[in-house]
Image (cartoon, rainbow, N blue to C red; front, side, top):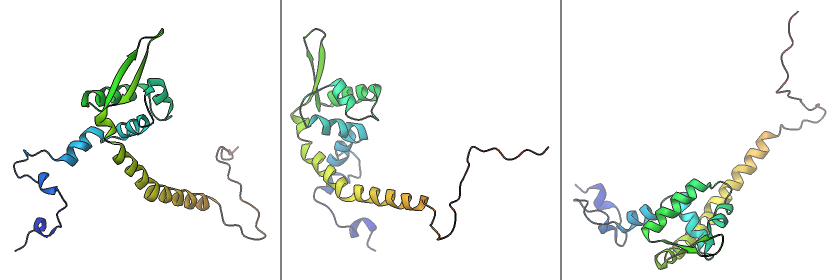
Length: 158
């Protein structure tokens, strides 16, 4: 009897990821381990434009906070993706730049952006349009608009 695994088409290099002992390094899982969070890839993508100061990266996304940015930059520096340089000016400043290893992520980051623009943005826009039209009550000719008072208290009995 043919197993489920043998019926699947194998991708190039997939045999490295399917070691029965689990001792073989899977390049895909290893890469996801380095850039596998939302902020890591966003920071790498931001640094593709060139070296940035901490505050510049922080201001680039309003949802990013300083604690998360600091921890993420330390992780990426430890992995060899980002290089931290202290500029000896008064007051001193710290500049972050991609290493050669980090620059190697440029094609992947660009492809992910293109994929998101192709597949995710149209889906989100369609969902937003549908939600906007669902909120509007249907207009019936001759009917007065209904007024909803959310803050109004119910009448008190005397």
